[in-house]
Structure formats: C-alpha cells, structure tokens
Length: 317
Ligand SMILES: [Zn+2]
Image 1 (cartoon, rainbow, N blue to C red):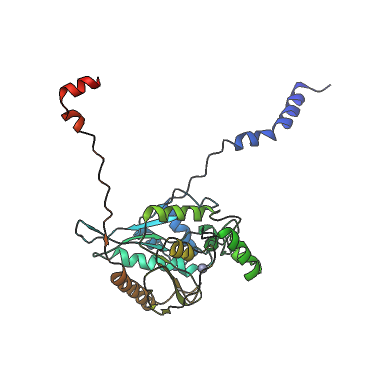
Image 2: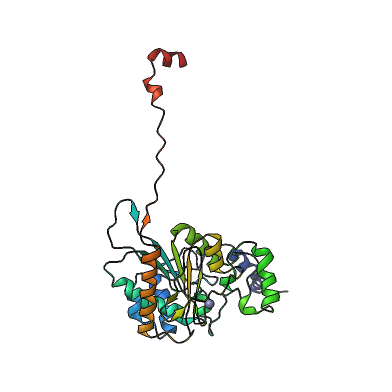
C-alpha cells in the first residue's frame, strides 16, 4: 500500500509534462531590445562600430523583430532646410546588413550617420536601417541568410515569384543554401516588415549596401549614377525576389546598390567620403525637392438643405 505522499508524487509526475504545454499558449512575447541595446550588440561584434557611434544616433526599433526576436534598428534624420509650402524634402532609405555576413555594409551606415548628424543643411529626409538581418550578423559565425536559412534578398514579392524564385534557385544556383529564397514570397518577418516600411515611408530613393563584388548596381527609372566613389556602374541584372527587382521594377523606385569590395574590411575614409559625395550629387541632380502630396479636399455637407424654403422642409417632415 502506497502512502499519501507517494500517491501525490505519482499524480504530480503524470500531470507535470502537461503543465508546460498549458503555459505555452499563454507565453508572453519576448520584449525586443531597445535601439541602444541593439546597437551595442553590433558594436560588441564589429570593431568598426564604437559605443560612441551608438550614442550618436537615437535609434528606434521596428515593431516587428527578426525571426529570433532581435530588433530592427531605425535611425531618423529629418531634413533641416526650410522649403516652400508646396515642396517637401525627398525621402531616402539607407539599408545595410540584408546579408548578415557582409559586415562592411553595416559599419558604413555609421560613418554616413556621422555625416548626417553633423550636416546642419540636411536637404533630404533620411531613414537608416543599419542591419536588417541582425540574426545573421550575430549567428557566430555570421551567415548570409536569416535564422530560417532564407536569403532575404531573394524573398521579396517580385513579379511571378512563385514560378521564378525556386526554379532559379534550383537550376541556376544548384540549390545553394546561401541563396535559398524561402518557401513563399515575403515569408520572412524581416521582409514582411520592410515591405510595409517602404509602403509607409514612401522613399523616393533606396540605397542598399552589399559586399564584396566591388561594383555599383542600379535598378529603377532615372539615369543611374555612373559611379559612387571607387565603385563603377555595372548592372548585375534582376534576381527573382531581390530588393532591387521588387522596389526598382515592381514599384518603379530607384534602388542604388553599392557593392563594396570587401565584406570584412572597411573602405578608407577617403573612399567613404567619395561615395557619399557622388551620392549627394546624384540626389541633387536627379531627385531634389519633391512636390508636396496634395491632401484631397474634404467633402462638405449639403448646405442647400438648410437654405431650402421652410415649406419644403415641412413637406419633407
Ligand atoms: Zn549581399
């Protein structure tokens, strides 16, 4: 005959495996790190980003995290010039780290952030996403793909993605795991968020930095810059699911893609300044200020009803 204590223990052992499952449905989402914490995650990994760089920009975070609930940082640099009432500053979206193992594409954002922070005559409204794929950057070793093993730059919902992306991956890349486009267009939270962000921010230009091809790629309508600093224009073509294909061709937005020479070595200060100066010159020439979006006139009530003769109103009652 078993004791009361042993019986209680036996019942507890039978029940216990079910308890975590009961709690799992009620689990609270892990809170995202704030902008400063997210920035320090990068600074701890990359010697080219300092704590001072993280103090320079008051990074916000996206309301959606990465697959592993790491933050997507957002740096905001509004224009500082006063414009006529019918004009607005052009909006420029700067991106790094779509591929987590391209360190220089992340670090160069902080050099440009210094430029933007010190510019008292900022002509454009800049929004900076220094690292879209923080899971890939911090994977140890860093990976091109995100935590689901998806190449984010093949996951954007481009035209006929379903019939093109997976066949391209199979036939042209030999099922290269570094270039897996994912199970469906925009299947990844990082891409879903960026697609919504582009729709909300409505950039006039996107600059998406990669490495290490050492060229300048371009998608979209206006004449491309012939070079950005040491990078000369060499259009790479449109891959199914790439950001350039999605924003440049599906949305008709200019997408400038500097491919730095090295993923693990930063360009020199002079090279970084040369790229920046050419970018600003191209923006000043081809983008400039934009006409302000005109709000639709409000629909007024039908005042004629109140001005109608009293007998008409009486008849209606
Ligand atoms: Zn890349």
